[in-house]
Image 1 (cartoon, rainbow, N blue to C red):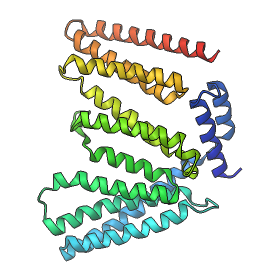
Image 2: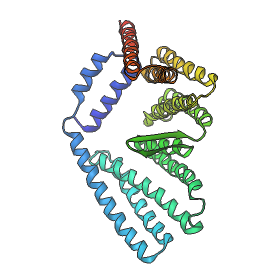
Image 3: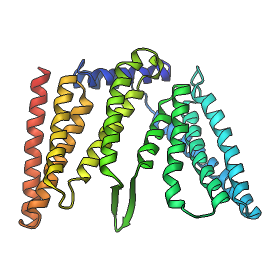
Image 4: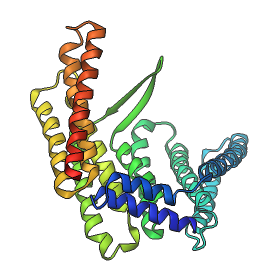
Length: 326
């Protein structure tokens, strides 16, 4: 069986499970039948090799640009490399015989990274380092547009995933390492992000149920990406709006959104809504528990009660799932 056929069958049976057409045991049986052994290691080696080659090539370009002391020359060199990577990546990723699908995807990823670097260097060449912090989100959006155009033109899902990631981060989502094993995440305007994510969810549903059954039939799976990213950033935005003593209105909105997603998942028979709803409703309950009882209970009692509540909710949800499958 060709690798593309295996991937298609795997994707189809996963969609059947998400739509409620097959149960979990049948999904596991079919996935085991269509699984390919050893492909992960081979793909990992390919990606590592391409990454090494790409980094060595960039090192040469950086050396040339440093010797010339010209950001414009560096932008032109990197732009040329990016165009070449994009062209070869598209050719290999869309090859009907699928001889180098992983290599093609890796080269497209590298070309988008090169496009981002090219935009940054062009800004430095034209304006210096002024307003670099403010121009980065715009560059992320421009790079995301290039990824989305590539995805729709050649019907490739991976560039669309990168484009959506760049788009949402360009709107103001960021993360950083704070030291001592701590990480920080923030959204510049959670209200705007929540509204944008809601639009992405609605567009994803429309894309999946209308466009992908009609004019964009060969873009199967694109709507699912919009839906997943929309659900993720909607819930994250609402969660951030409830932290650090925010008004009760946002707590109620976050809780209502989690319950609404569970109901929508049950009505639409879509496990994606149900999964996000359950996870973030649990996060909401844990956050409220943390805010009200962290300073009132001993540390051991706090974690004991939190663990007991988590097990209780897990048992209730699992029992409800088995009841619906019957």
